[in-house]
Image (cartoon, rainbow, N blue to C red; front, side, top):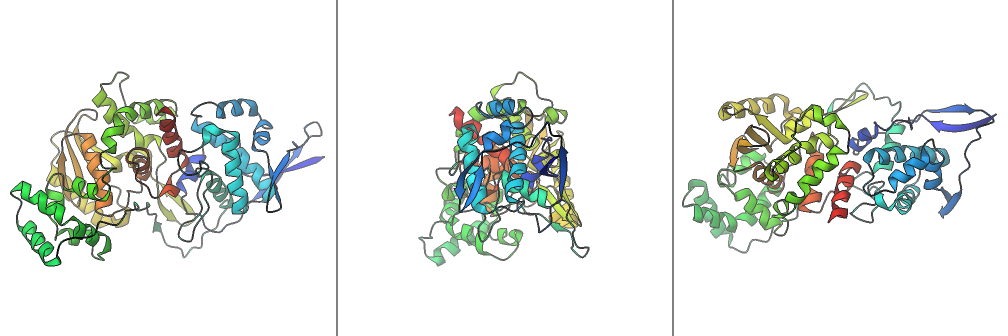
Length: 458
């Protein structure tokens, strides 16, 4: 009788990998559970060709592992096609990690995982990322301030967590979305006394608008530095700079000072990419369609808006908290609400802001709609009014894309974190549209897949 060691990885299931994309740096020490499965003499354990040596260790063939599985030839063919489906990618990761554990155990070295990630994109070039060396979506080594990431690492981490025992004394902790990596503001070239005089004038004047804009631009280096270095709460800091939020265009102006070449990117790229987002969504699971009803025939403006609304439904949601022995994640509806909140025409905005403030006061870090986010009134595809909600203010904008553009830039100008529930929608816009560098390790496989599809079409 021949025995083949396998782990409790559920390698025939392809629907649970999304959870590993959500487990960004959350796994703690735990043990793995292994079982044995008896194979009849007529079904000998598959023999894998061993190749490449990594510090004395032999690496197995990814291609042979997949071909040896049921329907392996079909999976190889699908992975070799242009823009492979995420479902095929998830299934491949499950098979490969199962074999990896058989050969190296559930805690292989970083060299083994790095080489395996490289081999995957070598055998299947269509899985190569458009960032870094191309294999980072499967494995990126950890650093002193950040744990390892990638599909292989997340799969291993989830397996090691089964079963895990969390001490009773551990309290509930709220997960944090990664803060955008903001580059330092430019140096202030004006005398401090002169800048202080301008700031005082701005605190007490809203007009003439041209002068407000000019002085806001001159005082931007000081303001951006204070927003990054101050230990006070954001609301207290903004009392010194009230025109930043109540004067249209000031968030965008400050962002342009930080990232002059990236500022117009959303408008430059979204007209072409919104259709590709909808096409990509159509090839995925249809589960998002139970939340959204989108007509087949759309105008260009409607397609642009629809693609924004689809993002939180087709990308993984964030993990909201960690409780005793359990991790909880936001639902798709939660993620959509934290990204773009849709309300009917006639909604009382002051009352809406009051309820929002009450929610923040009562729930703190657990509040769902953390600011900034977008509020639209009326029809989802053709809203009557659009607002950026930030620091308990509703800042009007002329369209959904204008409000989302301002919202994205507010994260960087105000130096605040992405909302955990919909963080992957913002990470996609950051890297896939604005092309702002930083936080590449936080890009999950689904986001990389969507970005890669864009890369191949340009």
